[in-house]
Structure formats: C-alpha cells, structure tokens
Image (tube, rainbow, N blue to C red):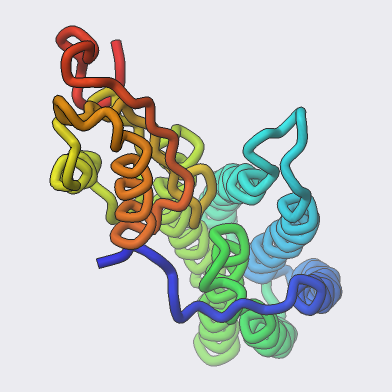
Length: 305
C-alpha cells in the first residue's frame, strides 16, 4: 500500500498566506487585550493565556515566513531545496513553548504562596473574547494543518488556547461565585502542564525529520525486502531511508544485480525505482549498481560503517 498523503486539502499558497496573515492579526490584537485585562483584573491565569496566545502569534509569523522560504527552488547552496525550513520553524516554536511553560510554572507557584485579589467579571469577559478569537484562528488554519507540520503545530496551539480560555472562564466564575482566588494560579499551572504535554507529544516527529530518521510508517527492512523481491535483484545493502521534508521520503542504496543480467541493469533499476514510488511513495531514490561478482565485501544491510 503506498505511503502517500492523498485526501489532504491543498490550498493555493497565496490564499494560505492570506489566511495566516489574518490569523496573526487577530491573535496579536487578542494578546494585547488579554495583557491589559490581566493587569487590570489582577488575573495571572489571564496573563498566562495571553502569553500562550502571543506565542501562537509568533508561531504563525514564523510559519508564514517559513512557508514562503520553503517554496524556493533548489539551488547550488541548497541542492535539496528549502522545504526543511518549516521543520526548523516548528522546532523553534516548540522550544519557545517549553520556556514559556516553565515561566508560567514559576509564576503560578509564587501566586499560590501569595494570592492576589482578582476582578472575576473582567477575567470572564476577556477570556470569552479570547475563546472566540481562538476558534476563528483554528478555522483559518484547519485545512492547511493537514499538510504541514509547521501549520499543524500552530493549529494545535490555538486549539490548546481555546481550552485554556475555557479554563480561565471557569476560574473567573469561581472567583465571582466563591471568592476562590487560589483557583487562578491553579489554572495557570494546568495551562503550563498542558503546554508541556503538547510539546512532548509533537516534538518527536520534528526531531525525527531533523535527525534524518525514516519517515513514519516506513520500515527500512520492509523496503529492503521489497527491493529484493524485484526481478533481477540479487540483494541490497548500504540502505539509507530518511525524510527530506515532512512529506518527502528519500532512499539511497547499493543494488546487487543478478549474475548474467548486467545488460538489463538499467531496466532493473528503473523497475526498483517505480516500485518504490508506487508502493512506498518514495519519489527520490539514488541507487548504485553492483554486479554479483564484484559486490561490496561484507557490507551492512542498513546504513554504513
């Protein structure tokens, strides 16, 4: 079964850029409103949600420029193209989220030890506005999130923001009804914990691409066996399988041609390349041909010494 990505919505690049621009604008406006509201109301949870929302706006800005850079064609400086810049952008965004979450933990613990008065109504109204903006931003980025690790990270951040806004509304309501000011720093710690959990669940895929790991769903041994099943192939070794970008798998390997069939080597290689594209979605493969009588001596099947 091909390991491809059929069924994803491919939005026109310029239209996608416009959506992200609108998402950036509404998030920056919301961040300003939340910070002002948090300072006036004394709510740390509201400021925490504002900082998280600001990080999402920054993530969208990084994603915007990364998308534009990624569309540049390959050149002498970047022979594989610029597509991986989106993966780098995702790593930057996740790293800043970790720093932000640790700061929120620090502030939340301090506020737990020294509770401050809070204007519950102001907290509720601004958090409700934040929830509306978060949902609008999620709607703007939803279709693009299916195709891009970078945009998906920004989309999930906004979804997390929406949950954070709901938590802030609950905290403000409890302050109004019960006077439980300790709920505010508790919600702050919960938001920080959610951010860290979210980063932990997503950053592995980013690191896998940057570390030249095999694409998710592709096993090197399975690919090697499929290559050896092609007529005319004696064996395969020095196999490397990696993700150049989120949706672009690459393969390099030494291909041993059956004895007496060297005259068909080019056709056999073409057959292997076609199989890799059809069955595994590997469109970029580099194969070094060896005749059975002069193959590498005791090579590694996967990787090289």
